[in-house]
Image (cartoon, rainbow, N blue to C red; front, side):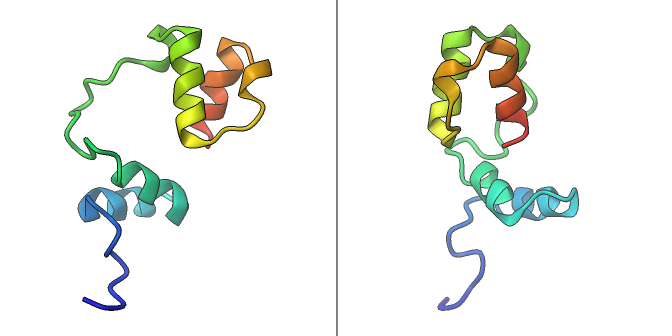
Length: 82
């Protein structure tokens, strides 16, 4: 459908739920468009359980600048607040 605001959203239900929780359109869309959007069922490992290298690559994937100078705690905070 031309003009459909969901044309690029893979998981519309998740997108709407995230927007209702107060997330920005960009962040909600990014989360709802992940390849496994809505399919993890809470089974993703906690950020604190990941290595600094894993956090670095996650930060790189979502476009966090300055990540090379961040320690593990800063990476976690940046990922959570991006």
